[in-house]
Every structure is written in structure tokens, then in C-alpha cells.
Image 1 (tube, one colour):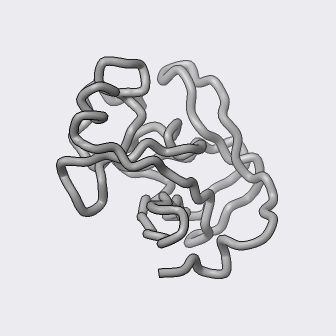
Image 2 (tube, helix red, strand yellow):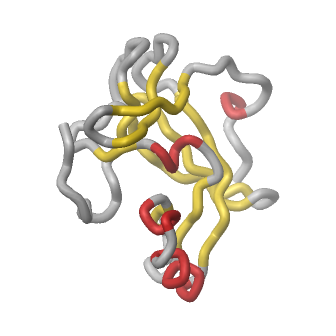
Length: 134
């Protein structure tokens, strides 16, 4: 599969990491983002079962993603999507695209209109291992 045209070419910076009072850090909009727009697309590193077990013992253990097709593997996201906090009603939907040249790409797409200053959140694929902050 090749990447859709919306992933090609320069993109305006519309998100940035910031500190939050209740969650430590998160990703926030710095411009208007419309429903359905791609917020960000990040490359990943595919982790085998042994790498997942090893990374669990490090601070990165809270930041890798479930693999979209193989439950024994994981994906380490190389971008801001790895800093998006969980929400039961998220502002972004997560999907994955396999590109034969560069591997799995995580795509964040707005699940509603997002205003500047709003946090970009996603629903984690696994049950939260922490108390969910609001």
C-alpha cells in the first residue's frame, strides 16, 4: 500500500507537546484542526516479543503501541503520537498504514473539530494501567 497524497509534502505545524497539570505532558493543538483531518503521521519501529519484554522494564514501556496485526509484537512510535494521552472520548482516532518502503505508520485523525489549546487524545488499544485523569 502506498501512502495517501495527504501524507506527502510539507505540513504546517498544528500540534506541539506541552506540560499538563494532571497528566505530566501531552500533545496540544496550536491551530484549528477539522473533523477527519490528519493531525500527524509517524513512522514506527516494529518490536518482536523479546524487545517488548525488554522495553517494558524501561520508561519507554508506557509509550509503545500494540501491533495492529500481531499481538505478540509492538510498535515503538517515532513521533508525537507516542505522547498523546488516553481519553474515553478522544479527540483523535488512531489507525495504521503499512508502507512497504518504511514499515508501519501510525496516523492520528481528528474525531471532531479541535480548537487551538485543546489536547490531542486517543483511546489506547489496551485497558489503561493507570488511573485515568480528566
